[in-house]
Length: 168
Ligand code: RP5
Image (cartoon, rainbow, N blue to C red; front, side, top):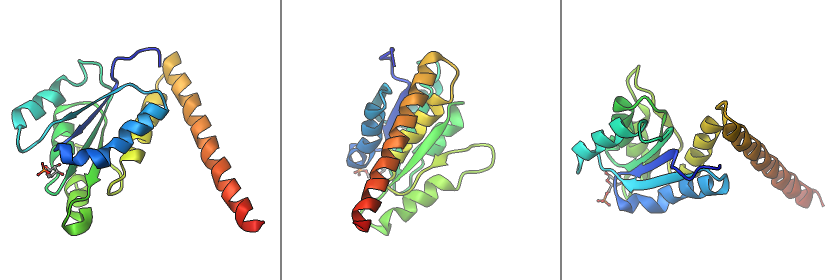
């Protein structure tokens, strides 16, 4: 992208979520999508969390990726206060294998959607954000869509190569 202004906000409830959430940033780096990353805790800093969600669109963000573990209310609360698409990443913690995080994020009430990826699925969150942006109508969006197609072609090539190795 020509711009370096962040268009994706990656936020998480704690810096302890970063080892999981970093994969979203890596995916966005690979596809040339500018992002910002920050800790925005729904429980420990609720006022800042609401302000982040309310100002996200006017600051130029177009997609929010929100990860949290345990009682993972961050993605849903952000979705409640922003018109932007929110992608939720259930972060697995020491207990319950991330099932608590998953259920906290995925069971949203009608009218307030969060696109929930798999437990620990931050890479797919980054890729989904890129697809959402690539569906836009500007030349930059079209260029991102082309990069996504190349990424997908690489996936197919790797899978074919693995099949060929098994057949050999
Ligand atoms: C959640 O509590 C965070 O998203 C994190 O997954 C979890 C634990 O946070 P720390 O105690 O490690 O800061 O709100």
